Image (cartoon, rainbow, N blue to C red; front, side):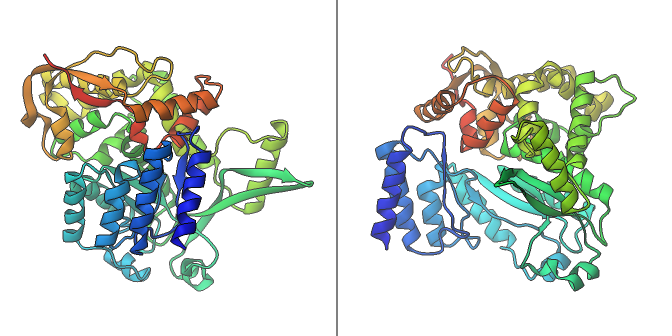
Length: 454
């Protein structure tokens, strides 16, 4: 009954009022199908205003994007972890037919993106690599098409097999030559009453239409799309470098970043980061579940009967890239800009690239000093460029030079202070991973940008 749902939401919100950094998750695969979901959304919003919890909420919205779904997003959109989500998964016609799926039309996607943009609600799409008939090329084309459409976040997942789905049937596995490996599911392992337990995912690493090498290549792109679009890593710079050269795509840029030309003199720490990531990706994969369990059991025992380093590779290395690799980052990004621009790149373009890297770094909130004074002058209307989904080159947004203001609103302050108070606040990998994991929407880890009066 709606009365019980209302009371439970108020109960939970009061109990968690002192932990505003915790996200409220709604366990509904299609929240927004039922008309009463609008009423529930309003109750959650009311709790946010009354108890200041939840500050962030996560749910899967109805894929059909009906009026009811729109109403739910309208109420909760700015609080949600991913905003409006349109999970395309794939657009390969043969793949859609094989998995018996029908996506929303191009017009419906454009309409939804325009609607969300007008309300300043972020948009997300979720894509899956590894489905039948999907190739490395067809999937990369989909990634680049999604960036051109203007999605604010592009989540690129690898396909995993579970009991009960059609792709797990022996005859279907054989038909598509589906080959899999096993990997740990986060830190889901422990010993209970003398029995070692470990959760896992069985991921598809090759098939008739793609190789294991293709899988590793897409896995690297997966990481970069996640870091840039979901974690907000240097999105200004990467959108600039894409728009400054009409012949280069984001997937090509990300591929160059993760596969640097070793004949060049790159900083050693940069090459170490790339190598460490690849080792982690391949190191988490096991041919059998038994091998995986044995490896985790050894880590657990060697670590004094506790879990070891997080097995959530994307968020761990994303945190490392954002917070711990600043010593080489600007040099490397600018060198990639020069390489892609070639002999025709101008001094002004390089200076603008450096300025956008600075913007990406300054935009991120400093955990040590939340109110740290930050200063940056811009000569382009970057806020309007972003509002227009970076679809046009930044040169079309030239303005008189003016200062950017890096603001901390009450919501951001409450969430981050809640995180700091609940942790030891040691500036290490665990803390950065925790910050990226718990603070939602993740844009609340960034300053709100406005223009200062000249």
